[in-house]
Image (cartoon, rainbow, N blue to C red):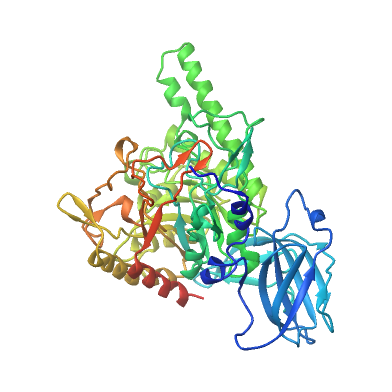
Length: 598
């Protein structure tokens, strides 16, 4: 692996701030850059005591510059420049009488602010001051026949162009599932467990590098232009990213559980700051906590299957310790991430449901020790999330299963039903791949549909979020998996047919497209030298359930690396990073839908 130099760490902060062309060849970016053809002044901003700009151990690396006229209207910027002792800003209109300067961490999160008058001045010496940190509150309320998702920004407003009380903004979730697993990487194995979003850190004498080349937008002499996935997602018109893993603690490389009293606590500031982007076209992030099956399956059952004795007690102690470790990790992760304004909320699991323990016998029961344990654990984890931060959302990502709705709305026989017990949930998360309509989720107009979320009584009724909704863009030719213009066109037609239906139904908060890029990690034996050929699924656009062909972008190795090559070394990603190729028909159709939704 090539070791990434200091320039990589510095430039990684200058990301997610404007168009791709802004960032590919310079350190500058801007959402409202100067109008071409309009001449203006060049201002020099001199920053005294640069080394003293430290807040809670964080230093800003970018200056966000906005200019206002005498009436208080913003007429210039934001223009972003690398923070230094002396910075030049060109083409500032002569009508600008005041600058607002935001000092950003990772080019996206405000730590300090300065205001400076500019009348008759060409050199500015600002005085930076602390700001009230930004955060976001999210809530869901009934709205007519459906629901409204509200987003409210707290802290100092990123722009003072409009002086007003903080407004509550209604939004529909226009999301993308993002798990950019490099080829031959496993989302189920240590140490990353699918988390590719952490910041670089020191481990003893070595630096453990991050995977920023996949998602941030920067140039570095050792790797060239990064892949800038976050910018690609923003360009879709999306407003939300769903992550499958983003953890404060990781397993050891051998899969064992570290002692949390001494383990490294991972941070994810660069990724989240880039998504937030100082509230300029922000991307909200739904964070999954990948609680494993031992947290939802009754761990005592395995022990009780053993004869009484030391082995039974060993298994009981081992499982109890593992569960305690994951529950501590859940708390730590929510504590660490919930105060970031990019974070919309948390899923306590992804598809940890199963017929035996969540909806046995196609929803008819029985309700037994296994089901009671599953729902008690779900209630417990949701309560942990909402106790730490009541202003972030909480849910789960469950299979599209009417049997679950039937079972959990009718059991237990006495007392609150399981869906009622999940009172800390804000929504029902559904991973769906429907190809005709969403009747299995929302029912039929004017009539009851078995297992419909729409027909639940008020004590159980919540909006539905499609935590996954998508279809493979690949097909089969004999025993070979193919990706052609025809297969992509068929999947694009499915997007055009199904995605508008999501936003026509007020029961639905929105959807997260599954998924951003193909993932080649489910091969038997861990080798991804070829695609995994999926099972037949006649309703899918190309007739097959190819798990590794769902991406808006296909993936390929670069630099002559073999698919079987390890994606990382002991201290970080192996470069060159995997390339991606746009499946443009899919992107175009999804973009049309997302850009048409307010």
